[in-house]
Length: 178
Image (cartoon, rainbow, N blue to C red; front, side, top):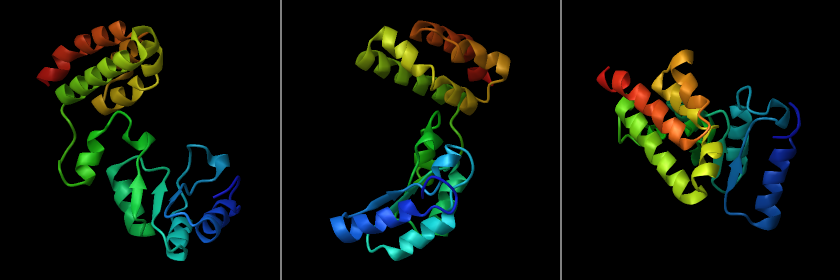
């Protein structure tokens, strides 16, 4: 919406983009810049924008669970919701929201998916860059796996993709038999 609570610059900009520039849709993040990634989005403000604009509005921000995605749809009337950080480490969320899956993934699925992510990162970035790049994503997968602080340490501190693979293999036996 703007820099601080009460600032409606984002709403006014969205209206101008539609009215003056003729955009066909708007992606709206109803959190203030001062909130960064903390605090909930202002869904009432998002609903106001949805109702005011003649184009589809997609709402993003603070959608970190399946329930929050559904709530955002229901409370705003948005044409779509965007899951950014809310899907990290849990790409199965999309299947659940689309009704193509129920329940959480198994530990085996999570480990397999992360292995696939590592493979793709190595292909695109090279082994050295992939190792550095992926370190910011490992905590998300560790959360989805439900790892304790001690269990997750080897993965989230892995300096290379080889170390990450070894950490996953070390986790694999107890996780995959649970």
